Amino acid sequence: MTYPDGLSAFPITPTNEDGSIDLGALRELVLPLVEARVDSIGLLGSTGTYMYLSREERRRATEAAVAISGGVPIIAGIGALRTDDSVRLAQDARAAGASAGLLAPVSYTPLTDEEVFEHFSTVARESGLPICIYDNPGTTHFTFSPELLGRLSRIEGIVAVKSPAPGAAEIRAHHFALKTVVRNGCSLGYSGDWDSAEGLIAGASSWYSVIGGLFPITCLAIVRAAQRNDAGEARRLNAHLEPIWSLFKEFSSLRVVYTIAELNRAIHAKPPRPILPLSPPARAKVETALAGLPADLLR
Amino acid sequence: MTYPDGLSAFPITPTNEDGSIDLGALRELVLPLVEARVDSIGLLGSTGTYMYLSREERRRATEAAVAISGGVPIIAGIGALRTDDSVRLAQDARAAGASAGLLAPVSYTPLTDEEVFEHFSTVARESGLPICIYDNPGTTHFTFSPELLGRLSRIEGIVAVKSPAPGAAEIRAHHFALKTVVRNGCSLGYSGDWDSAEGLIAGASSWYSVIGGLFPITCLAIVRAAQRNDAGEARRLNAHLEPIWSLFKEFSSLRVVYTIAELNRAIHAKPPRPILPLSPPARAKVETALAGLPADLLR
Image 1 (tube, one colour):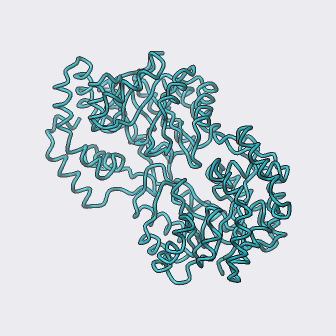
Image 2 (image 1 turned 45 degrees about the vertical axis):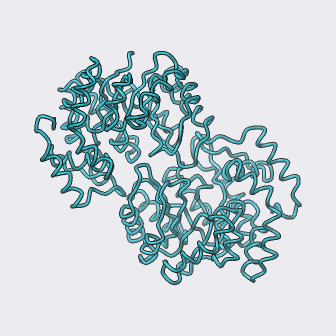
Image 3 (image 1 turned 120 degrees about the vertical axis):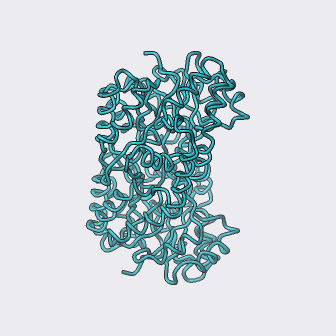
């Protein structure tokens, strides 16, 4: 398969209090992504609280999303603490029709490079699912060296790297440094919404976007502008979203998008405990920010 | 109940490759702790790979340990990413006969103080199990402020704090600072084997010990020396174990105790993947260190 470069839009996974998926609400979030023809749907990412969902619920979410995807590729989170659990999640995702798996080196006991190498190669080999390496030290507490990413990109079935955007000033150097170590053809992309437009402008293939899960049309416009080398337009649109980036930095993108999903799309889901919804003053800040944005960006 | 201060000995949890407990091997590890009359058995700690075991397997391990405990209190790890899962694990541990639960603020999404406060108070309230706060930023990536520990220690049912030893030079100041913020009567103890003897000498009530899971008699001798204010003897014995502390620092206590359990006790368990057994050169270092230690310490 060709890896789906471009905009990967990451919706939240609405759940009931017992941790079961609210499939109706999930469909309400996924359908606009399909209609906008995003390049892929990043299901069960960190924003999709994958680590808080059981194997069975992850399977239900993936099947429900694939069923309405209309051919838009699904990249499904398959991370777990145990290697055998990640293998099973990858097999489930593949069986459910996901196009790729997003695999983070989730840790409790800090992991060595060799352990992460074996973990990734086992999951790729035993699942046959194309794998995107999910580099996110803020949640996994594992830091990939460029050397390890280079080795991993040469494993059969490992096709992409999703890196945390290192900041607008450093992203060009970061991208080119990574490009020199990974296998030719390995897709390189960024998460961390506020700096990802700069990543695309620097030459990255993908933006793994949290806000893309709610405003796919606006995010696609940024991606398409970057793809046609219209850096000015990509930056202009990205700058419009600054009030949202500022909230993400202050309160975390996860908690903020739950609130936006409620205010803007009437999705009344709460994040899984212990994660709490935003406090009333923080929520008021989100309301103010949304009210100040042009309506045609909020889609 | 009176919280079991003193030596809490943490065995590994031997498992088969599929993640099921090897109950025979677990009994072989627990029985010597019972015979040595350690003050408590720290079952399913980080050394006991609790985060890699299912609810059902944790229940089996706790029941098996309680059955042979001969009245030695069991402190069982009840940490999980989800609050409802930790509540169920605490209820299971209580039903199985554990005396207390060891609760860490395990995280994937970084947690706020308020989220951790709610998590702990919910688990304490809904389980009725006495709770020891397990502060271990190296695995949980949550840092407790003294203020938060003070608030938590005033919740009904929260009875103890297990802190990571901050280093021999700082441990006295750390212990007294903590003592001023927590509820009077809250048990304070340390993990991080190499500096824990200093913690006891400084006045801490407990040593949560990894090597105590294999050498309970030696570790009890250190604890009893500290309890009778014989700091010289406690330090002398602790210094004997320096070759082991050095291996713990170089290769992690978890990986090293698996190797010691194999070499010294013929327990052929492997840590759960992705965690790998020590490499042959590291293993050789462990063999050399054990060979150099007086035999009467290795028990």
